[in-house]
Length: 327
Figure 1 (cartoon, rainbow, N blue to C red):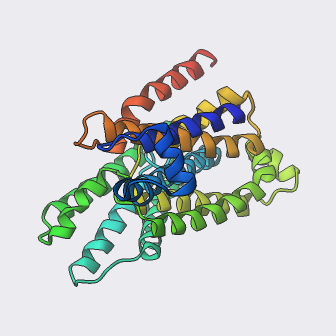
Figure 2: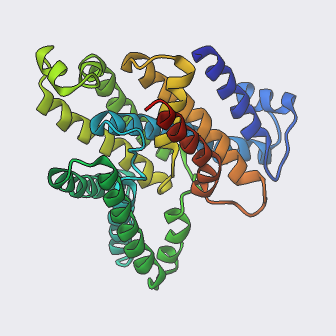
């Protein structure tokens, strides 16, 4: 599986570099990438616009898929994910309020501040969901509550952005719909550091996570500190989804669909296999969806969330029907 996904990623990278308002031949792409030889305009397009965007889509798509896998493991629910539970919307709300506060005073907001704000928003939304989980044991009701929290956060964000006066703040509307446009190498560097460190900790927890997925009683008998593990799952999933929201806005259904796709393709439920599988397949799926968003109605660019919803909702529905047949 990993070999096929790696080849798919290479094909998608080549396709995303080649597509756009300026088409490039395979020979030109090779020379631009390996030797940085070619037309100055083509060099700027590839190295300053397309490559940062491609890398951002891969990094954030993989992070979002891993976050979805952690949330599904935490709640024991196959449709739990940052978007469905309202975590992405909570992060979007706090980031929007933070950006409005800074931009309204003529201040420039940095990547670290944006990630911090998104992390706070993610934790607040997750906190509401956890409080509700103490009142009900029905996962279906918990998912509905998460959706309601997401709608409330999105409504407040849209209201604030709509009535903002500053032109830069009004442009937040595009970000709030989800987009990888405008990525820079500094953005890629920051998200790479945050996601890499988070993934290292996540992989370190793969063995106790595997025991936890067998049930809390089994994990406790295996010597796992269940309370500490649950806290780590909350923090790691929130940080990953916060990083995605801070840079690209909310992206729907990647965190739900990709973990199930990996399970089917890998034929395994071991976290040691599913975690890297989610990382690479999430990168490939998100990169493909971003290419569709850029090119189908060019020069008009679609919201990445619109494309992921259109392509991945059937996957989620098929997964739910398949699970229902096996009940």
